[in-house]
Amino acid sequence: MTWTKLLADKDAQKHKTSKKELDNMRALITRDLADASLPGLSADRSFATAYNAALQAANMAIACAGYRIVSKVGHHRVSFESVKLVLGKPADKYADYFETCRRKRNTIDYTFSNVATETEAKEILAQAFRFYGEIEDWIAKNHPSLKK
Image (tube, rainbow, N blue to C red; front, side, top):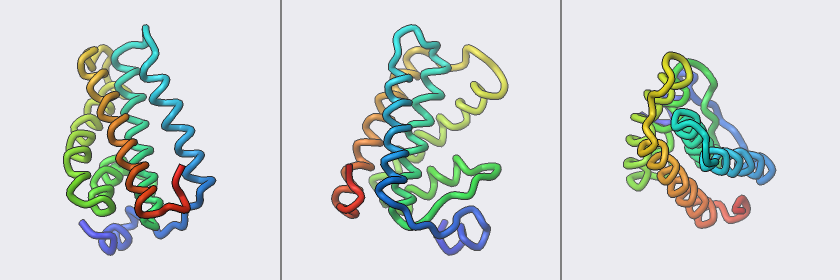
C-alpha cells in the first residue's frame, strides 16, 4: 500500500491539518478513553468505545502526514493500514491488533450483543491508551507545532 495508490483508489485525499483539528480529535479520544473506562459499562460498549479512540488516534497521525481517509466502506481498515505508512514499523503491532479488533467491533455494533469479554475490553483499552501515547510522542517529535 502506498499513498499514491490510496489517492488513485480514492481511499485517501490530501489534507492539511491544524492544531485546532487535532485538538478536537484529542477531545474525542479523551472522551472515549474515559467512557470506555466507566465502571458498569458493558464489555461490548467498552470495547467499541476504546476501539473508536484508537481509530481517532490513527487518523491524527494520518492528518499530520498530510492525508485524510475517505469515509466509505472499509475506511476503518484503510486507516489502520495507512498508519503503518506514517509511523513505519512501530505501528505494525498496533495496526494488526486493531484490525482484528475492527472485525469484533463490527459484530458488536451491527450483529450481536455480548461479543466482547471483560478481558478483551480491558486489553483494547490498555492498547488504545498506549497507541494514543505513541501517536502523541510521534507528533511532538515530528510535528512540534501540532503537539498537545
